[in-house]
Image (cartoon, rainbow, N blue to C red; front, side, top):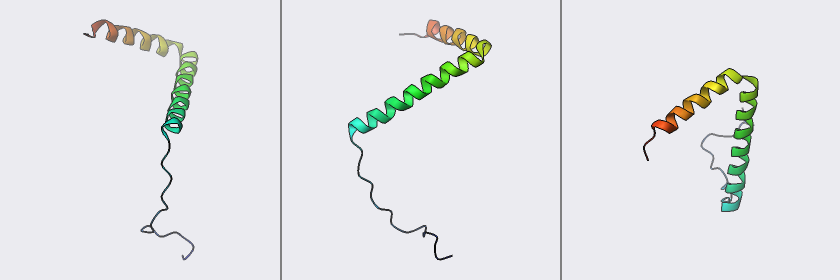
Length: 64
């Protein structure tokens, strides 16, 4: 199969992403994650309530 790329072929170097691009990507990821959590909480209210109570208990028992 000559049209398939070789595994050992050197890959072209991708330009390094800037700090701003990394932050923008991270910000987008965190927004999507928060949105997914909100959606899950709306769809599964019992599980969300349990998670809230569990988080509250963790925060109460956490030592500063």
